[in-house]
Length: 233
Image (cartoon, rainbow, N blue to C red):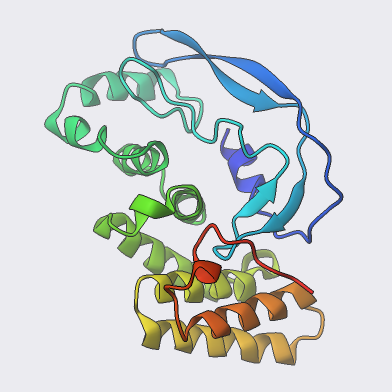
């Protein structure tokens, strides 16, 4: 599960659309043994991006974070026996009663933090997933929003697999969405400088940066919303 989630964040240019085929995937809750199904797919392709750089795919309907129907536990990975014992103790705590009210991906990050599973870069990608798919509530979650900004800056500096400038563009957009315009402008301009200096970086990065720059004038515009399609020329 961990490798599958991380693989979803490879920054590839849009590919030819291949319609996804729905499949029912059986799951078993690690606590209580409840059996349920999630919606999966045998194939899927990225057709574009939104302004938050979330992929627009032919299988957006799939289950992004499996959660146990009865106790609400998010299954963000396969848990060991020792971890299941830890989970069993956790689900009866007041902390879990609070965190269970969170949307699935934010709930998964809260659980992963408790389990010690938020080391870089995995924690960052969980938070990015939350920002992408739960944008309507993510920016009201002050602790996780702050953790996202901090983790993003680390990833920009690490520049893993050369994705630093792309992640910096996403960071600039997220900061602007959070009304941190000065910080957003700093990261936008820094990413623009990198994109200008490195001709090997993809052109869609430069177009994305230009779109963000246009949005800084009025982030309230519907064209700048996290779900708005990113128009590439």
